[in-house]
Length: 241
Image 1 (spheres, one colour):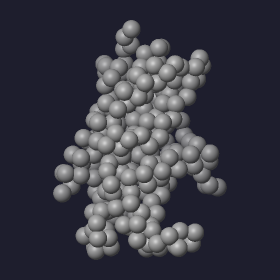
Image 2 (cartoon, rainbow, N blue to C red):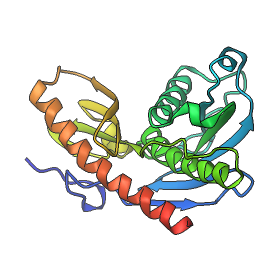
Image 3 (cartoon, helix red, strand yellow):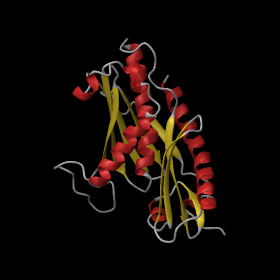
């Protein structure tokens, strides 16, 4: 069965990805990632010191914050002035976990890197785009720390990225846009490393349960999509140098 997608994409074809680095010049590392019509600004800030609970470890920390700007969507979303809501907390924790999975905290020393991910425009896949862009911002911040003599070797072990997959009208699709995501029978986000490791798999059936063979097919689709993102990350970082 075939399904016509926006832009004529194949079921196994991701949206076009661009990553522009250095867009926030005051940050130690930054990029603007665009996946189709979704755009996320990622900025990494390096600060000396860690939270008190972390001090005795002698190791640093990497964390993230996520925000959806009011007119990133078709209708205005109110700012979260009294603190991050449940969905926002869940996404920023996911971003932080993803980044820490490929970071050697002992190499950071007692420094904290905070990566802010602000969604400028949302058309599905904001959390996956944030993770993919956040890695680039963190990589640039790591280069800055090396150049400044703050660290002796890069704390990063390998790239990490994320992509969405899902079942829409019974068809497995890669990199869902908003229209597809909002009607999907199964919605899944996959975070993986370049070496093939899986950091997190978030999969939910919105109606009937999905089968193991469908899960395997979705993971295979996600793996191919991640390879495209790793290539985009490498291009962005190579261009920077």
